[in-house]
Length: 188
Image (cartoon, rainbow, N blue to C red):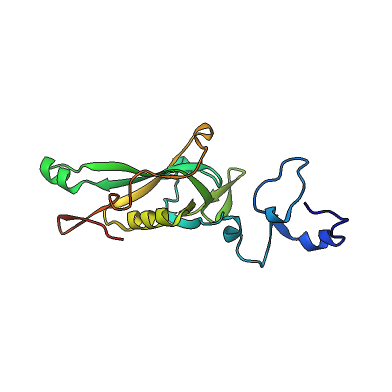
């Protein structure tokens, strides 16, 4: 904890710092909970060891982000929506499939702009930044760039948000890319 007796010029040293995580009332101030501008980006400062931040494209209207109600520090599931080429061909009508690929993922940021709408400040933007491990990053990037799929965020209840993020499908089974009508497994 930071004390005047331990460091008389502590107030000067921490001036201009931001908190990485919230402080509870009465909790002592510690250096590991602070980040100073210029010491690297804020996003890299709040990432736990071994985690990565990856942005996925979302729509500006919030249709793929629970109507715009997803905010930083919420937990979400990531669902891939894709056209099922084989079923579409067999049935003669378009068939879509929804495939959950990640669960209980922490949202680091939504968009980059804060605007005022109807007298309230609203976060807007075309992307969501998620906290993932390196393997999950690869899975998300593959899913984003599969030709016929879109990623959607599903807001989790606060009660269901405990624990680490989970990979629902293995990266090897996660994606089928259809090229010229022929399905192929996506490679890493």
